[in-house]
Length: 148
Image (tube, rainbow, N blue to C red):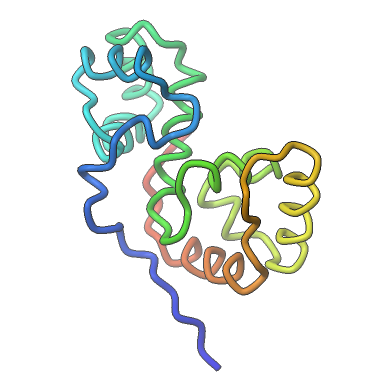
């Protein structure tokens, strides 16, 4: 049985609001907007390099480390089924990047996601092993976007 894997950029990614990223509230969104970052796609494109993140930090007044966290979330958003709380859950389980996700074992990661969510109550629904496996396969096929 073949897995149905979707790794291509999601439709409407360009229109995805910055506030869909955990940790970006209206005040942070306003700072990013003032720096010319109006959606998740802008964040990912302009924050893909260390230099871009530093420039964004200078324009927005936000710390570069915080911008990197947001950019990593935006990068994970390229995978179908990963958004706000799911990206936050992955980060809490030690998966911060698409490259890290691509290296994981679905069964082990699903167990870790459940353990983390039981302890921290990040999301109402933890993904099952099949879904986690699909994310991992998608992560393996995505072109590298973010450099460090």
